[in-house]
Amino acid sequence: MSRDAEPESGPDALLPGALPAQLNAELIAFRRDLHMHPELGNQEFRTTAAIKERLEREGLAPRVLPAGTGLICDIGIPDGGTAPGPMLALRADIDALPIPDTKTVPYRSAVPDRAHACGHDVHTAIVLGTGIVLAGLAREGLLPHPVRLIFQPAEEVLPGGATDAIEAGVLDGVGRIIGVHCDPRVDVGRIGLRQGAITSACDRLEISLDGPGGHTARPHLTTDLVTAAARVATDVPALLSRRVDARAGLAVTFGRLHAGHACNVVPQHAELSGTVRCLDLDTWRRAPDMVHAAVDEVAAMHRAKSAITYVRGVPPVVNEPAMTALLANAMTARRGTESVETTEQSLGGEDFSWYLEHLPGALARLGVRAAGETGLPRDLHQGDFDVDEGAIRVGVELFTAAALLDAGAGTLA
Image (cartoon, rainbow, N blue to C red; front, side, top):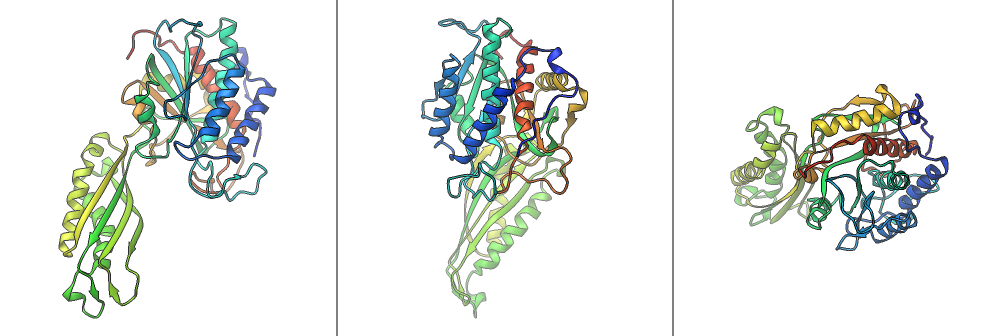
């Protein structure tokens, strides 16, 4: 699905770095190729090789991360030299999701039960295209500060591939970082921005309940494990809602509950899986202890033994004011003031947050909805998710302008 979103106010008169039509077409084709060949987290070998090959054709020297997937590439640093100050990093995530692609398009996923249903293929094409444009500007002496491209694996794998990437040194020499995430609720040609928290914390919760089992004719003689599991699913969120300030937005939601195999047998084992999401950073840090206590209380009330696996996910993405302003100024320079809208904080998680534990940065919501499209938008993480590919041009313009307007070189954060 493609509509080449053109700027309305002649942005290229303000800043160099226009995206040539031929390169725009190439990036759309690149995105479609990734869409047809999705790879799960830490398995993105084909994707990594494709990115690396294209950057090398531009005369750049990308470096694959130690695990073999994902890579970084510096632009604007002389051969054998070092950056004069901390670099601006542009981050893309490159992994797909373990769900089937249900669209009927020529670039539908060719891999069963795998799909780019979150727009990471778009993010990747944007950072790749920005790298190509910036490399050309660097050759002309028009890039004011060096830039690092980060193509990160495994964003969808808790606690996120960003943690491994950071450990591998992707932030060495970097002083600030920006990224985008596709938003099907925002029209193509626009971005959504918010200073402060723009996403939420997200953790994973696994609960096992055990009891002696028995006959459904005599539930009073045993532990009614099905009822216990149902109560955990309903009462734990209710308990927490009265133990946490409502403004913290702590939400426990279960997506899987399994117990038993026969209609007349009280089972000995039940399992629940869900997520813990939180708008507030301090509450997120206290959430594991509070969730453990609530689960244990409800389970004990029904004489069930509980075991809890609490998997730390990601903290909220908290946009730093100056970097949020950089994205707003870059988008305004390219497409005018009407192209930037204020967005709300979502309950979705994004491992971009781990970078912001180390550096100032900001994440923008990139509009991918075709202008004039009616009806409910195709949501993320659904098999029919797709984008208006005009968003690729917009993303390249945004990142290119940000790199040209960036005045943050100085001491490392």
